[in-house]
Length: 363
View 1 (cartoon, rainbow, N blue to C red):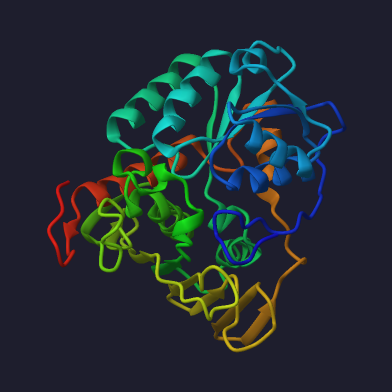
View 2 (cartoon, one colour):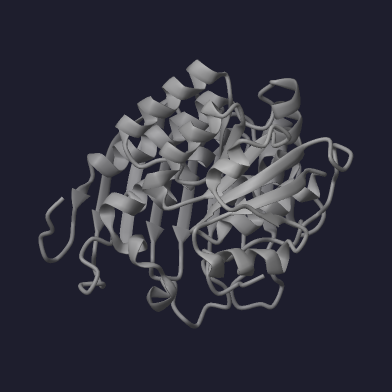
């Protein structure tokens, strides 16, 4: 596991099988983002059987097979989609191509599990919604900063138990290390990656909706900028937004590509949840100035002031729930509407954002 680059970060698997070997099979298509490794680790840890991989780039395929040597290499996307044994396709394609791939997967009668952001435009969102309605298949999303982070899972459990009362605000910080030299060209092209609020911001919108129990929200204001990367003028290296949810709670999030080299990991991701009877702070990936590793959650309420170190203790129930949802046609892991609403609000924040860049950019 790399801790220097969020694009290759995948937490150590915590196996918790919910099916027997061969009972639920899946394939991987589109290896453009390193998150595909974490997605497949999560599914195999839940007992799913990885059968196929396809990507037109043999280098990416061989790197993938180093981690999953049992997988068969498909000669084409069609070879995967024509296999009636495949229940689900996991994919981390170029962001702007994720919707079209998902439509093809669902029309082939399979469920789809895509990296975030699941799509980049409202037009794509309409196409995805239409395909879900038409096919009855799932368009699941890997909002990894909640579903594949133990502090985030534990925070949700505490909130559900009423540990901090009614949630009235969620504040999230999503800093990442740029590592520009290691990024593919599409990462810097607005039409392909969608902008920072569409991309990284979708993680934060997902958390705001989840922790507040909201089904909708409005974007009050949002900003983007390219402050320090003139060589990549289409990159947003900063973005933030304010939301108000349909529960009356507020949300604020900030995303950036300014993690300094001195930090021991790729980003100091934090989430603060304020309730009427207490508050929670998550220090997801690092406790700065210590060698304590990731997984820190702080809870303060009327009964306690506690620092929890949860690494290896909570697990990632999302993956097992997703597998069971696909088999039973339920929505325990994440509702389809939630997956789409988080993407929609992130796109709306991006589309209406004020550009604060020192040098004007065409949008």
